[in-house]
Length: 91
Image 1 (cartoon, helix red, strand yellow):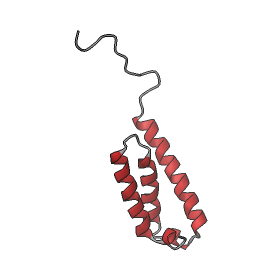
Image 2 (cartoon, rainbow, N blue to C red; image 1 turned 180 degrees about the vertical axis):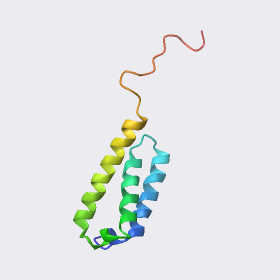
Image 3 (cartoon, rainbow, N blue to C red; image 1 turned 120 degrees about the vertical axis):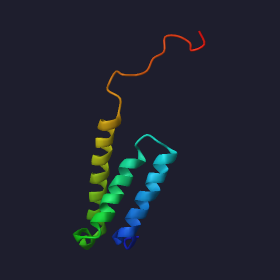
């Protein structure tokens, strides 16, 4: 398992799978994880490949959380703006 965490293309493949999952279950849940995996996969081409698996997973968790928070802030409805219907569409 630790060998897989050191391979850059495994992170990019995980990002692709998570991106596909986001298409099947929308809601910006998997997209933050996909962005985190893509960032770590690209960073594994550089100096991040020298780190042990534990710090890489920590970086993945932090990047995923930040990406999810940014997505939530950017695309969420403002507080109190819920759609309510006062009448039936057939009236």
